[in-house]
Image (cartoon, rainbow, N blue to C red; front, side):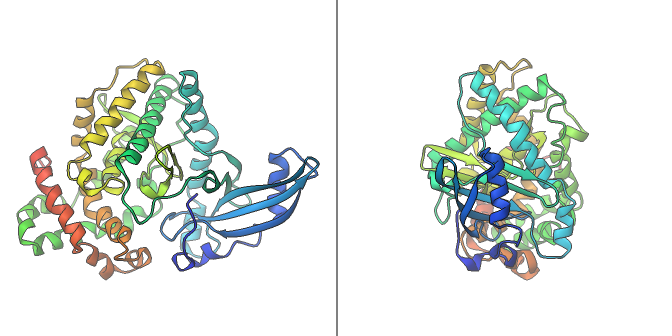
Length: 416
């Protein structure tokens, strides 16, 4: 559900709509949705709707369907999300994954219940855009109302403002709070949401992931100001990926009595948000929503969403703001379990420092390079030498020069 970009930014299978995506298909969808069996589609224009790299596991198209019913002439802007059409290993791998079923469950079960609970507590916050059609067979496809005509857009080529970030963390806190209530009172209601980023097909064998620490250590070795930190990461290079995986799967495999567990978004970065000025933000792309520590979204946001100055303080002010909204919302919705504490949240963030290590050493350099238009996503994905370049870009080195002293001050390097 992102806004249109230039054609050269798209993959081949994102440029041309599949043959089944036609007036007959959209007409069938709208006849059911509008409860108008006489509905006839009179015009259909289809264009790409996601820039290359915005969505790894799907392709998206935008259409405006003009149609007639017994009540008159209408048009409806829609977003169609489906699987890549090109044959190959990626298509086969994704077709067998949980991604679409997880997202359908989020849109049709979890998020409607979260909104219902908020509304009953006097909060009319909207957590999702309506999904007007979904199916897994004969093809995996979802259709949504298009947010762009409603004034929403993805932020590109400019920093996100503090007010926009506060909107993000306020809405995330409400989502997390209601999920905590549901997990406490209806423990089986969300049990299907058990697949997170770590269960993404081939993630743990992807060269982008497996070579991250090697490239990071190489960078530390070459920057005199940073070489003193290299021994810390040499200590963990063998098992840090497993330790990161343990964090993400803690709820399912190593439940901690003092942990704060939520239904997370799972891929909480700027391209998965659409903003309507300073008035609202809508989260999109729920394919890896799962039950896990709240730190999975919060720590991810430090590296994939926040501006450098906020990241250099480990997101302290925004995460504390998030906690204030979380606490307030838990009280409003009548949360019955023991209330979380701000100090407890930071204790959990510290305990999950291996997730920081992974994101800082692997995802952050690529994200910075792509957002600054210094490297292309397709080149980073396909070429190891291009990935290595990301580690020596000035903006990444500057980030690391600020982050590692903060890690040391916070005690992240003790007892590795």
